[in-house]
Each structure stands twice: as C-alpha cells, then as structure tokens.
Image 1 (cartoon, rainbow, N blue to C red):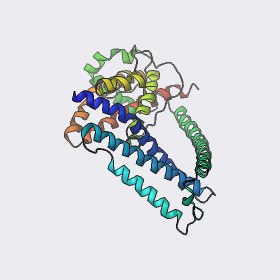
Image 2: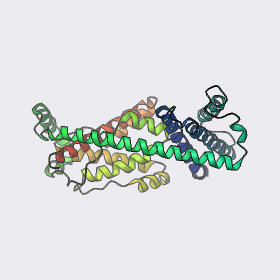
Image 3: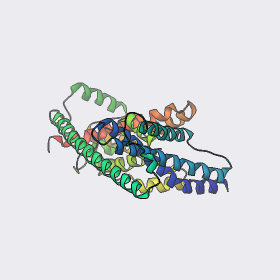
Image 4: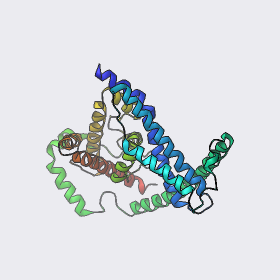
Length: 330
C-alpha cells in the first residue's frame, strides 16, 4: 500500500517538479541575460523575467508542500528554493522602487490592470527570445570554431601511431588483461564503426553535476538521450544496442530505478568491450561503476560522484577515439 501511495505521489508531483526545474532554468538564464545585457535598454524586461521565474518557483513549491501534506500529513519540499524565490521577488521590488529607476514610477501599482500585464509579459517574452537567439547564434559560432580547431588538431595526429609510449603502454596493459580479452575477444577483431557523423567527446563532469542540481535531475534525462545515440554510433556492429530515453525513463519508474542501474552497467561494459576497436583500453566497466555507487552510499555519497566521473571519462575516451578515426577522412 505504501508503495502505491509513493507512486501516486510521484505521478501527481511530477508536473510540479517539472515546473520547478523550468523555473530554475529560466531564473538562471535571466541572471545570465542580465549580466550579458545590462544597460542595453532592456533592464526592465530582464528583471521582469527574473521576477516571473521567482513567482513561478514559489507557486510550484507551494503546490508540492500541499501535496505532501495530503499524502504524508507533513510538509516536505525544497524550503531553500522558497527562500530563493522570496529573496528574488523582494530584491526586484526594492530595486524597482530605488534610485536605480529600473522600473518607472508607480510601475507595480498597475499590476491589477490585465491589459498592462499582457503588454509587459509580451514585451518580456520578446526580449528574452531576442536574447536567446543572439546567445544561440554566438554559441553556434564559437562551437563551430572550436570544433574546426579540435578536428584540425585530430588531423595532425596519427590515430594509432602518434604516440609510441602510449602504444607500448597500451600493448603491455592489453597483454596483461587476459580475462578481459577472453570475454571481449571480438573487440580487437572488429574495425571501427562506420562513420555516421561526429559525436560529442568533451562532456564535462563538473557541468553535469551542476546542471543536474539546477534542473532537479532533469538534465540527466537529456544526458541519457544524447549518450544513447553516441554509444550506438561508436559501437555500431558489436551486436548490441543501448536503449533510448523513453525506455530508460518508464522502465526506471516501474522498477524503482533498478533498470536505470542496469542501463548504466551495460553502457560501461559496452564502452570497455568496444574500446579495442579504436586501440584504446580501459579497466573500468559496469562492475566498477556499481561498486563505486555502493561505496558512495556508505561514505557520504562521495563514491557516487566518482562513479559518474569514470562514466563520463570513459564516454569521452571512446567518442574521441571514434572522432579521431575519421578526422583525416573528412
């Protein structure tokens, strides 16, 4: 009965958790926009965006508190987020009435006027769309320049023989890994996967942790969506397939996250077994990942961070090897 209650609580809370994550993302983007576009004639609209995200964050947390009260008889939730939302709202109100003159005189006295609210909301949305488009354009330009520079450096490297020391160390380690070779003897026999476009090979562990925290875990879903595609590309031809986001999400709910652990375990094993196709070798596999998760549950959760560190490290290893393989041919 308690399991069904928890499941029902999760289903009802899910939309509000999503709203809270969206509020935090929009609040972060609002702060970024204020920093990048201060005193460009858009201060009022930029602060309105911050105000809206703060109000929305407060509302979603209130609903979560009410739901927890109904189901469990107590208030459970992210109290620090409520404090953040209240601070943001109060800060904007006082700034709006200070000598900074971000808002015109008596601006907030018109808040009961529906037409006024519609007009201001429309102006705010238009400003943020323009800021987003500009930021997206700038990011794409920098990303393309960085990608061109990165693959130019790849072309200047010999994929297999550019580092004799690396090859010697690799061969020594590879020869020592008898049991590994027995289990994964197809890895060295298969050639690189067919080229299906370059994949992301510079995932940041610190950024992953930060974005998972800011988005209340929703960034993890985006991460799963992207890396499932990447793994299926770089490991194509090994007879396996990494399931995508939908299966990860719904089976994770049904099995209380057991399937998620199984998915991560298989990805780590698949990376290890396919690495020799690109003259790479890693000792970390699915067992290593699960072991660090278990240790993490004992030692204040620190092992969990290390588990995801080696996961991302190995993901970058095989993705970069795949990109380097085809850098000279494209």
